Image 1 (cartoon, rainbow, N blue to C red):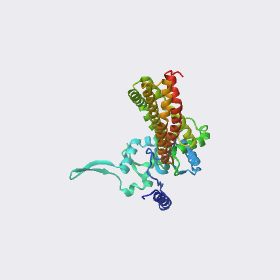
Image 2: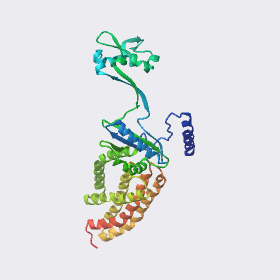
Image 3: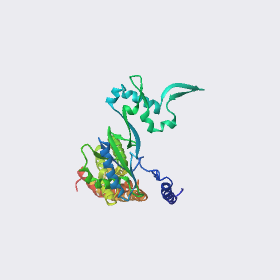
Image 4: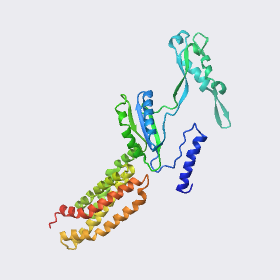
Length: 390
């Protein structure tokens, strides 16, 4: 598929045909993700000490999630249950026949898993020689109860005389999180919806369940939201060094500590605009939006440097301080507004992207507000900072 329309048609075709061809398989047809590699964009973990309890709660979560048409392929990571042969050794009968649980385990392991008895050399390779039952007999689990177990009396005892053999159903895979049982309920989302948006909506739907959770059981958020949080933590770890480098560059550029502080304080001006634009357009504030806010701070400080530098040039030429502030703001109004407008217009194509959209929206909204504040309030801030009289 070479075009977006071809990809959509191919995805639709595969989504219809593959489930019919493989009804017992779990089919997922999706494009390569743009964001961090997560198994599913929407994930919730039910963590607790009892597997039966958390499995029941996970079923409730899945039932709630299946009611939302924006979610696809709701499932959990414990998969379907499988048949397991469980052998419970009776201590009283085992003692009567002088049979230990260890001998039972060793005999069954030898027959079904096999025990190495030697090695066979073939050219330059050593192949292990394993002793175990033929494959046809290993599949006949009904005959396990007739397995002969050596005893301390010198006679072999059938397994059913010292143990109970029964067939039970158990989860195929049991996952743990922090040494506790954990079931992850997960789902895909339809095109045009972000995992963070669906996670926030589902958290509200799950609120009535939180008050009914048994002691020791909790519901944790995973998926794209969790990966985004990890990315934010990594950015926060390097933030002090980044701020120090930025401030150092401002001091070198402006050759003044006080002017560098003034420019540095204008960096957060666009946060309010970014927050409003994200709220109005209903975009999540995640890892990508945070990148946009960080880039936005650099753009704002750049515009502030342009204006402050012009004021300093005019003052050095002998223009009165108050006139220098006013005339610099007027002369630099057009360059600042045009560069900001160019940046805002450049973000428009990205604003509809599911992945990059929050970053573009944050930059656009923040830059619009910050530009207005820069050309209107920064001259007043400069005059107040350096006590320029009227």
